[in-house]
Length: 158
Image (tube, rainbow, N blue to C red):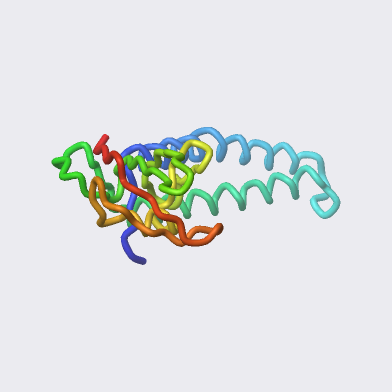
């Protein structure tokens, strides 16, 4: 598996979720399975089957998070000099030259992307169009609404 780019915050969120799964949810599921077993016949025991299904989801998520963390390339842009260049982890403000609408995005890893909080995946069309560009550059990005021209008005390494 190749390296997975991740911000410091994204890696910490995964570590927190992993801790929660291992120390809280896993023991609760084990207890639910034990309790359901006490009810007798396992073939027709809905509580037992539900607990086993929850256990499968929990264990799968634990494996998924551990794999991502073991292959994570954690990038802390606050430790890099701000050259005005758009890279992974930067916060970029772009101006739509057609509508004069300004929007700010933080370029993050796939697991951290949340468009409602203006966090876009490094693999999104907008991020791919911005990576490598610099402050005051004008870029054409192919969006779902067609080709749009943007100007990079601010690049922050925070």
